[in-house]
Length: 445
Image 1 (tube, rainbow, N blue to C red):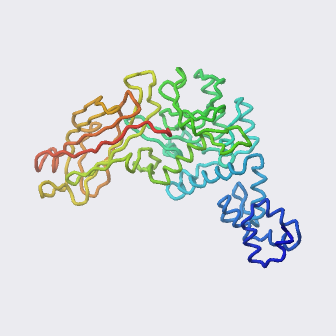
Image 2: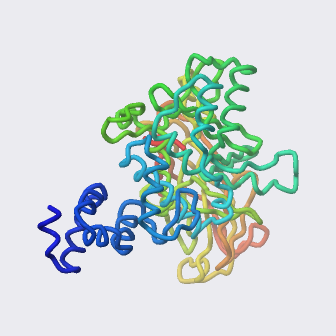
């Protein structure tokens, strides 16, 4: 091949070399000096680094700048020589997608990502916990060793407890916000649940992610089969845990030579990145705090209805930490978020415009598997009677409902009066809330 390529001009030679794999380029470069010079061309290796690693500047796996792309590619291959290269590229794409979104939308959370763990860090965890991490999870931690965690003992850092990259939700006095744990915390929390909460070390499950608010939500990785589980109301006493990823998607978690190695951690983070990128979930601001809110924001999971100028958006999320799989009547728990606002044109009734309206009552019909299981007709929402004005921000509230099955729905209406309850400017009118789903998802967050 070398002799055949030697007679070509620079441009045709460059085009041909760009079609070869990096290993074939190295082989061709051994033929003679001209091919060696062409194979060392910086633009060629810049193209390779971008195609395989999405690198636009030469840098090593820790982000340190390097003098050229050829050296960058060499160091990347050496740093991850013990892993299947296609898996390395896939894990890097996963992190790149997440970090790009965080950089654009939630940079304070991106700043909590830790430098990648070393192989010795991973080996220490495996020795202390007597487990063998699935290959994809090992690689995920080689890129980033979880997040820097908030200091619960310092009240000044309370807002930092909402910077978890997985996010969460709140309802009543229950609030969760999930962080990806660094390896030293994986060790500490796994030891804690084994020592004090009766969790069996034989299960080969380790704690990988957890809420750092005062409400508990914990995710466990089964290091044997690669599945990720989330704890229910009784995760430790009765062994109740729910898988976070479809079992059929997990494969080759320990096979260095298998095809398309993927464990639940990798699939889970890839799906999380897809939801963020597609705007299904977003950052929500409450007071001075911002966090990733897991209530869906787009159809069909989020419905929007406008009645007489009052807009209502509604969606729900499965709450695994409240689930009780042994309770036939209230086996599954769902939280729902209602966001109501008055559009800029105001409240319009029979051609008349009012500059405010106030909620008086609510009516809900709750179904499980198509059958009505509950009907609610009462005053107020969470004890409040929101007064809406044109152009103001949404009034948001969360509540919850149990279901005996993993599939259901809610629909109903609110009763408003134009003006104020204390000074009504007309008769009551109903604001519809379209049916929205209560569904236990394939991917549980």
